[in-house]
Image 1 (tube, rainbow, N blue to C red):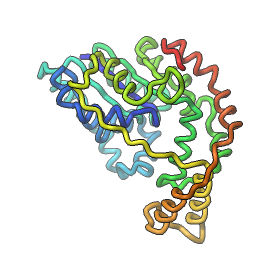
Image 2: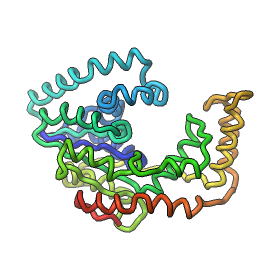
Image 3: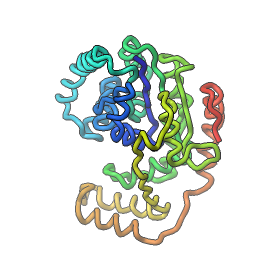
Image 4: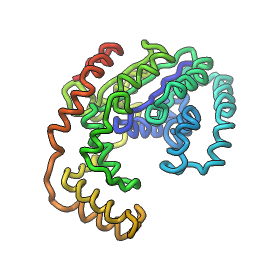
Length: 310
């Protein structure tokens, strides 16, 4: 049985891919593809939680809030046995020739070599081949999206954009070339397959992502055979809106006032700020700084893994 392992990254179409796998689970099953919902579209982070433990425990306990501490430990102890048993049952059924696993957490929560090595030790003995699929946005677009989520999301981010840009550095999660070296080491350079999404010339846009993904797992795409959800695009907040919401976060999360993310007053104020016609673009010089940091690495990554970026 072959394995197609989609590892992300965040903000690069993972939700669309997982929605496609969920909607077409039965159709793909009839064509011999095993789609396990707990590894693909429901609790897709399970494999990453196991592989990255204990280093990523805080993320799954305090950020994702998927477990309390004891429950996570129990899950980790059982995961490998449960996974292997489920896989062996699927093989005995002789219904499947391939398996697809999709989780952007495999990239973001398995950033050290030990996590990737652990994944390889679990997966490679049970599959005839493992193809690692990685979709990405250019780092400038990725950073803006992550920063917006940080400010708008439950973390109630208070970090200024210039300070955030200072965290977007080589050897961080944003350094795709550096991170993929680990995956190439344990899964083989020829088994790493990458593609860029976004608005740049040559990048995948819209349904091109799903077409590319289906082709990457060895199937021809057919609109008659598969269902694809309409993508809902949310308008991103302008830079000045984001700056104002950051100030709101600072005011509502300090020694004197502490409001939760779901506080009705805070939610209402965030909604009002988003409606304000505040224009403003992210400063261009920050774009240039980030692009320069990763230019050489991106070129080397695309040359190594055989994909030419737009």
